Length: 424
Image (tube, rainbow, N blue to C red):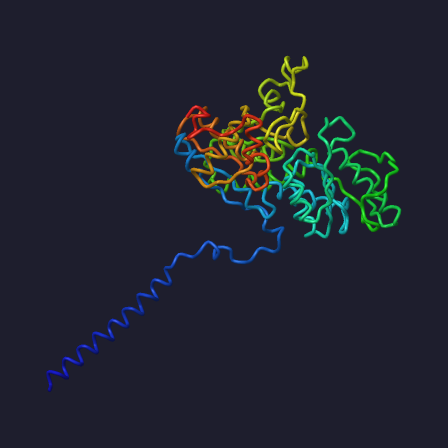
């Protein structure tokens, strides 16, 4: 009997020990548990505007392994409005509100190939403003559809030279003037230094006697002017550049990107060169653009192009939002060591390669930037760290850049199985 009692007591002791051991083990593990990515953000971000920026910098594995370099991409397609232009839209609107050039209830106008327009239409309501956009009628139709869904008014116009009064940028400038004229008639135009807002970026109203495209109530207009407004440059000099520096630990050798307005490449290159003059910054330029010649030769046009052999449409390229044939105030701020040329076929092939090997579904400008990153890697050799910008996703490029029939009609059907289109 004593033996049975002893055995029972022993079993009970063992059971109690196991319970206590399990309790302390679970408690220890819970204390050591690695926090989830969400728990790192101590507080929720304050609305849409504060969700812009601080995008991740990722290693593009396939390109890094193929080149022997660390090729990193800044995931700007993860901004709320889906592109790098969210930063610019926020900066332009905030500076305009601070200066009094734009008031709550006013209309922000812009001439854009798509991404800046979408970003403005996305963030403007957060500031109590409206958005009117003028875009070329040859951009992907889904961009217009997105803009209209966001509540912006959209004008699609034929592509013409910037010197033509009906270039989409010039029309957007006039629309801001019309909004200010309407506000003035209604007696609600804001004053700056005692003067009514009757002039937009040096352009006086031409007095067109057309029916207003704006509603009967309007608090005035502001022309965003992304090409010449240096708020564009500042958005990247004060935001994107510092983020890249911090996220890379300052350990990068080169930066490369294409340019449209020039704000991204200028702001980032200027900041990085100030932090480390040894960082090499490059431009990747699409077909039809004159920036490659300007950077490498000091002139916008080659002799052959000056003699009239230039493409009839200087933007006769499948890439959208990059390439230009004039020097903007933003691009003039860039600190560049050189430039590379990219082709439409390379951009198309790169987009499919990244989708297949990395799961990255990128737009045309992002693909061109990655072409540039590989070019830089080939030039510098293995062992270097190269950063580029992943501007937007492929969701805005379905009707052209990702349309098999469109590509076939233009001789751009992708055929590569690897990176042989870049000599790898």
